[in-house]
Structures are given as structure tokens and as C-alpha cells.
Amino acid sequence: MTAFKTLGQFIIERQKDFPYAKGELSRLLRDIGIAAKIVNREINKAGLVDILGDAGSSNIQGESQKKLDIYANEQFIAALRSGGECCIVVSEENDEYLVIDSDISKEANYVVALDPLDGSSNIDVNVGVGTIFSIYRRKSDTGKHSTNEDVLQLGTEQVAAGYVIYGSSTMLVYTTGKGVNGFTLDPSIGEFCLSHPNMTVPAAGTIYSINEGNYIHFPDGVKKYIKYCQVEDPDTNRPYTSRYTGSMVADIHRTLIKGGIFIYPPTTGAKKGKLRLIYECNPMAYIIEQAGGKASDGYKRIMEIEVRELHQRSSIFIGSMDMVLKAEEFMSSFSPKLFVKSFEGEVKIQ
Image 1 (cartoon, rainbow, N blue to C red):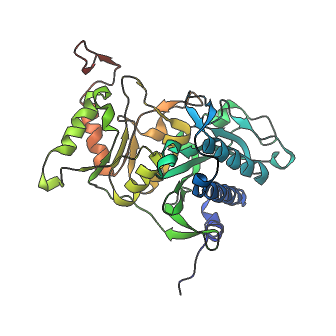
Image 2 (cartoon, helix red, strand yellow):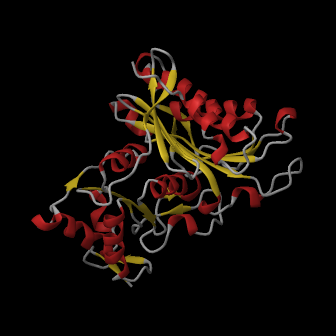
Image 3 (cartoon, one colour):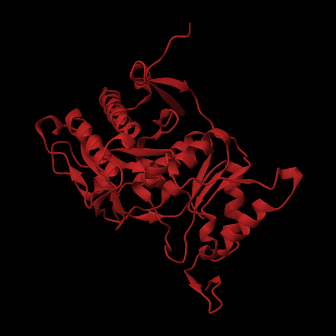
């Protein structure tokens, strides 16, 4: 009989891989795992209670907040607050970063960035949703007031990142810079158990993931790449298959396991891209790079983009190394300047 290795056991075993191995990061990751189990429970019974639908408020991006968005946000913040290892929480659902100022957090050394419930609009139709998290070590001195310097760090400064996908099974996937490992929640014992050790994204894939409904608003480089994906060529296994769920976590989870590329490009309505750099693009980029893949904004590495704003947006091209490199080739052939609509309604580049 195969012995289970739980998330807690695995974290303790790998603690020596972390340069500040004092147990703080291990406890922080366990706190995130506990919150994920609580959120998973509510998602699984969401259809049976009054927790679906809009909450009647909007987040900083002007997006309608779902009830489960707010619930997930509260649960993760509560877990981080009670754990004592986190000094700042950055969340998609909060306008400003939250400083955790409590007796047990006075010596806290970590900043956590969260997308508490990615793809929440899909819950009503039973499509996979997820949580994305990213962990940084604070820059300011312990015991002093936290600053913007603690929050606006490059993606290369991440010490850990991960996501939880709530689907047919619930999985927590994370990295601390020593590869990527996946844990599946066993509901019979209430523990995340190691199920996908040393995850790697295939260098090449046959799936491209993009919202083609916005095709007319894409830059020419993206349009040309989509057409490339659709051309028949047996030598490169084209045409590729198109798969898009509208949930970044679900699409990238599939990409990590099966290979492929996920693209959320700039458009005429969102010229800098739409996904948030701190708590969506950077953590996913860290995970995919650790799994042997690549992540860029179409021109440069995601994790090297300067972070200037809390809710800064970016485009993203992420997944199998070969596919992202090919997409970058198409992007580099066209100017990255702003897009305008011509009088014929076509999108062109000035």
C-alpha cells in the first residue's frame, strides 16, 4: 500500500531548500492550505446555499464582486492574519494593501498577494475556478511600518507562488523555486496529498487558449499567430486545438499538464493587457518557468516587468517554451505601439 505524503509533511521535508529556513514559510504555506480547504468546502456546496451571485459591490477594477469572491477573500485574509507570518496582504478584492498589525505579526517577514477566486463568474455553470497566491519577503525592517517597497517588487523577487484549482478534484500546486509539485485534496481525510511530483510543462504542445471572440481587437501579431495555429502542417502537428474556459487557473493548469499556450493579449480596449501583474501574471509566470516553460508579455519576460502600481495590468503569453517563443516571433514583427480602429472597423497599429 502506497503511503500518502501530505502537504504539511512535504513542506517540512523541503524546508531546507529555502534560504531562510526557520519554519516561517512552511507555516505560511500551511495557512494557505487550510484556507483553501475552507473555500473548497463552500464552493462544493455553493449550489445548496445562498452564496452564488453578485454581492452588490464592485472591486477596484470596477468588476462586480461575487459573493464567493468576498467569502474567499475573507477566509484567506483571516488565515494569514491568525498565522502570524504575514505582514501585508495584497488582494484583487481590496483597493489598497492590507497591513496586518497585530501582536503575533510584529516579527512577520512575508508579503502575500492574492487573487482569492479567479474565474468566479464560472461557478454558476460548474466550471473550474481557483485561487492564485504569491509570496515575497518584506524589504522594510521587521517591526517597522511596511512600505510600498514591500509590495511593488519584481516577480523575480518571489520566494513562493502557487494556485489552487477547485474542479472535479481540488489541487494545490506550488513552487518555492525548486521545481513544481501538485497536491490533490483527499476529502476522506481532509488533507492535500502529493499526487503530481516534479511537474514539468511539455516543451511543445498542440493547444492554444485565447478568447477568440475578441479577435477583431487583437494586435496584428496575435492575429497572425492564431492563423498560424490554424494552418494544417503535419510536421508541426498543426492545426492546433483551441481550448478556453475563461478561468486563468483552469486554462494554465491544463497547459502545465498537457502543454500548450495561454494568451491574454492587449486589445484596443485594454492596451496594457487586462490581467493583474502582481497577483495573476507574476505567480503564474514563476510556476510555469519553474516547470520548464516560458512567460512573457509578448516582448519581454513577465517577471522582469517593473511594478509601479498595486493593481497594474499586463498582457501575458505563457506555457510551453516552443509555443511562447513562436508567438513572440509574430509579436516582434509588429510595433507594440497603441492600437486604433480604422474607419473600416479593422484593428491596425500606428
